[in-house]
Image (cartoon, rainbow, N blue to C red; front, side, top):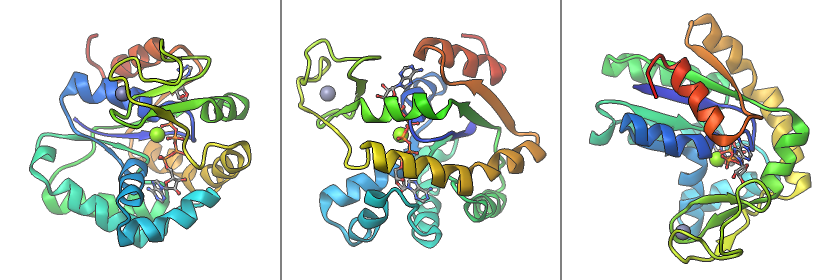
Length: 216
Ligand code: AP5
Ligand code: MG
Ligand code: ZN
């Protein structure tokens, strides 16, 4: 399976990606996670990306495209992959099409997770992430049984720097202007499936699996 997860900030891409990657046994590639890892490690790439991310803006295409191209050439992507948060502009989508054509493969489906602005802001602002294992929680919708501590590994939970109301609102605007055109782009290629991201987490996953044409 070669899949893309499309959807606004807080739609549930990262949450669903864990289940999808597990079910189809494919690597989960999140460009946001790659940038956050680089920021943590203090790399040049991380330094360049941080300013854009903190402002809720997109990192320039040329920085993103190269990373994804390299990542897709790694051995674990031979039998498929799940891209989360990439592509995010028409230019990125066109480049991806070229890269895949060069390796002689195509996309299977683009999963578009829909949710409206009120839900998105509430979800992003309430999100907490485990520093150790990366598990995503939500203070109301999906809390850790141990409060500020991860109930899977005991790590501390933190909040992303860009998960405040102002930056989330900006990220949603940027999504509508720069990323939403990809809905039409992939719909024209007959690759798009759309699911209702406002349902419960398990329900959304069920809808995705059905839309990919496989059993639960
Ligand atoms: P990125 O990390 O990709 O952030 P995003 O797209 O804004 O999306 P989020 O990670 O915020 O949301 P999500 O859909 O994954 O939601 P989640 O599952 O966590 O990108 C960050 C930044 O990096 C960008 O702003 C940009 O600067 C840069 N960047 C990244 N890729 C780039 C690219 N290709 N080009 C240029 N720049 C790029 O869920 C959110 C919360 O809701 C959680 O708390 C979760 O528990 C809860 N939740 C999830 N599903 C449900 C549900 N069904 N019901 C109730 N609660 C739910
Ligand atoms: Mg995410
Ligand atoms: Zn943990």
